[in-house]
Image (cartoon, rainbow, N blue to C red; front, side, top):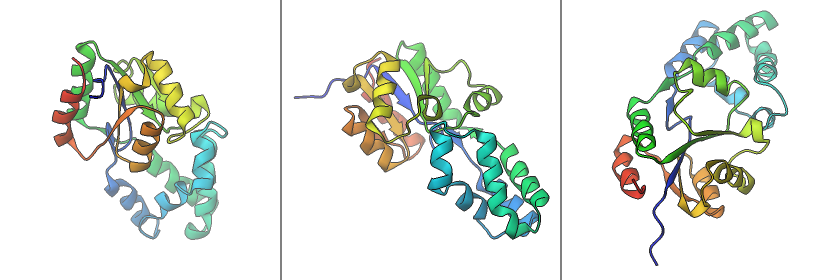
Length: 206
């Protein structure tokens, strides 16, 4: 039996709609005499990251914890805070092809949600990047208190989209997120770049 075509789209933010230039972090690391990749390594340690992604600590508290962990490498708390603040000023860039696709399918009547593991800075980021009005719903892990790939995250997402899970197409660049969405009953596609847009258009009913 053929699967129903999707009538709603749930798209990941980082790695799909928002891109990060690694040269920015690398430049900060060079400026402060840090080893390459250390900012990301510290910030993404799961014990530090998971609480901010589920709303148990704020973005500001997470940034402060990164600076604390970085202090031994730069020699003083002041330099550590300066390095982390400089790194955090860069908020990424929007992929214009993905944004055009989101606007295209939404204009055609497809409900579109942003499904992301994010901190409480997400609303400010969306505003800064000019994306505030581009989604019918925003499903932010730090607001709902559970992160992808948990089944409960995707249940909250399809409920917010007011669409049966089997009719939601989820797009993410991470295998673990795609697998989690499928377990929750959604259609899901692993994003590899704008060449995927042809398939996504065909998979949506519009």
